[in-house]
Length: 229
Image (cartoon, rainbow, N blue to C red; front, side, top):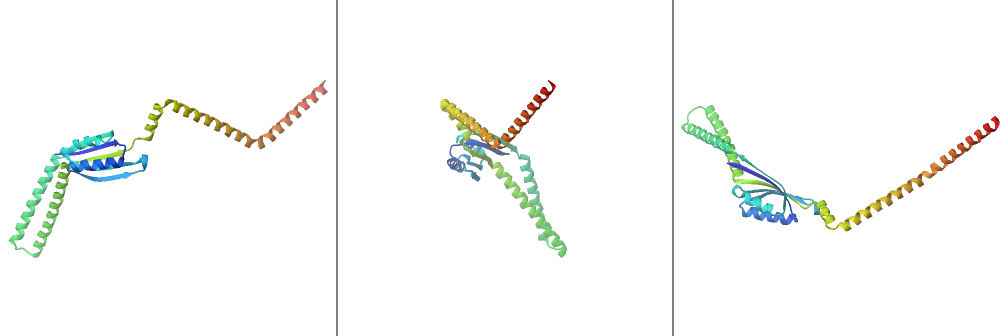
């Protein structure tokens, strides 16, 4: 006995149309759509779906899902639960036998009130165990009968479309790149000019002070040379 789980990522052109096709294919296989979650808008729209399909048809359904578009990712696991299923069956059988024994004891009657209360408490406990094991068995058998497919639908990436467009129209792409480069160079020159203009109120007094100090030093050196001569 195997529990089969699949994951599939498919790129499609229309999310809503793909969901409709998925729902129809799953229902035709005898399965059902367990969960569907669509999010995003326009180019970022995506959807995550959980499908339950009969295990003997899971590969046929997977083929249909792959045909929706381009498969980006896929994985499959199959877990052998034969021993787990057999163990549940055995424990459930033992619990039911114990339940019948307690019922037989209760039918014989006799005993004190305390004994009756103890027996009824034990019966309640065993019946609870039977219900728990029965639920586990049914759940496991449902997982064996119905495989689980985790499907993620997404739209083509905008970046990929842009790369294809640039390759298909090289002349336009080169011209656009040149225009972008010229615009960037012009913007750089404008910012440099703005920076220079903003610094003039601080730079001009500094230049004037430097020039005055330079002239004063030259005059002092000339005076010293004349005295020495």
